[in-house]
Image (cartoon, rainbow, N blue to C red; front, side, top):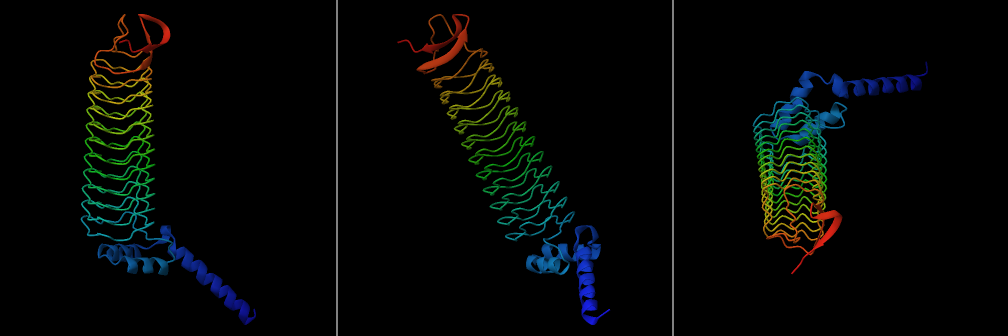
Length: 320
């Protein structure tokens, strides 16, 4: 075989060897340990150089034990942290955007101001983590554990939190515009002044949640459980609450313009000062429409309703 041909074959063989060596499936324990150790020491640039040397496209930190590691302000963009243990880690202002963190453990970790944009965290454990002002736009947090987490002021626009456990979490002033919270557990959560504009909360459990002054305009809460929830001064204009349970909920001063309350359970709910102009209360439970068509303490211009006193569906208008 001519020498140039031999050189080409040798080059192809070397490239193939490098590709095999650099794949996640064949990364040696020794090389993995070196990479994790460099990251633990904050030498992320060196760890990335090692990854390139090994033919990897990104940092492979899957399954890494980084318990209580000081990773403040580190750049772990796109890193593979699948199943990694970061319990109690210091990750404030860290860049974890586009990282893979499926089933990662971040319990009690400090992620204040961290960047988790487009990060995938399904089934991750973030219980009691500090995520104050974290950037989590379009993050994937389905079935994650965020019990007791502090998400004050966090940006969760377009985030996916289906079936996520957010019980007793602090989401005050959080941004959840168009977030998916289908069947999420928000029992006892603090959502004071949170922005849930266009959020999907179908089937969510918000028992005892604090939604004071929250913005739920155009949100969907079909069959949501809001028993004993505090919705004082909340914005619920055009909100879909069909079949929701608002038993004993506090709706004082709430704005319910055009809200869909058909088949909603409002038993013992406090609607003092709530504005139901244009709301649909067809077959709602717990609202008493008397023969005089008046609602004591409830301001409105007109309400779409059905009642024993008003045959069929009709529009009730305020009578002076």
